[in-house]
Image 1: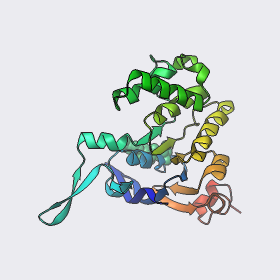
Image 2: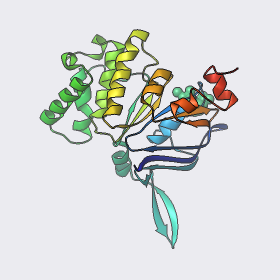
Image 3: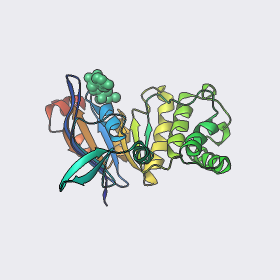
Length: 257
Ligand code: ADP
Ligand code: MG
C-alpha cells in the first residue's frame, strides 16, 4: 500500500503559541488513523493543516505524493517552493473531505439540497446527476426518508449523517473527522459511528479525532496519541490504548498503576 498522507516534521505556531512541535504521521490508502489526546493538544490544528484550512509553519505534508498547498519548481537549478494557485489548491482540497463536531449544514436547504450543492457548484455536475448521487449517498447513511427535511427537522445524529453524505458527494480520497460525535446526545453517537465504520470498511482512508475508545479499538489500523503538540505514542490500538509506555498516555487511558 502506498502512503496517501505523509505528515513530516510539521510545526504550527500561532503568534507566540507553539501548537504543533514536529509531528510525523503517515496514513496509507485504505487505512484508518485515530488521533487521541487531551483537549488543547493540537488535534484539530493538525487536521486543519491537512486540509489546508491552516498553513504550516515548518515541515511538509504530502498528499498522494504531492506537497500540500505547494509546488516545487526549479529556479536557477535549485528547488524552490511556490504556493499553489487558487485553482490548483481548490482541486487538491476537493480530494479531502472534512466533517466537524458541529454539523454546519446550510439551514435553508433540505438534506438533499445540502448534499447536491457542492457537486453542482464545484464539480459542475448537472442537477439531475447531482440529485441521483445525493439520493444514493443519503441511502448509504440511512436517510432516504429524510431527503426533503430541513436541518432543523433532523436530530443531531441525522444532521451529522447528512454532513458525512455531503462530504462524500465530492468523492474525496481522504476523509477527516474532527470529534464528529462530541456534540451529540449519547443515544445518537452510535448511528454516526456506525456510518463511519461502514465507510472505513468500504476502503475509505480516514483520519479521525475522537474520544470514542471502542471505535478506535474496532476500526483503527493505527492509533496516535498526542499531547502538547507532540506525538507521544503511535501504534496499534492494543499497543497505544491497552499498553501505553509513556506516563502521559498511561494517565490519559487510565492505566496508571
Ligand atoms: P485540540 O483539538 O487537541 O483540542 P487545538 O488544535 O484545537 O487542540 O488547539 C491547540 C492549541 O492551539 C490550543 O491552545 C488552542 O487555543 C490553540 N489554537 C488553535 N487555533 C488557534 C488559532 N487560530 N489562533 C491561536 N491559537 C489557536
Ligand atoms: Mg479539537
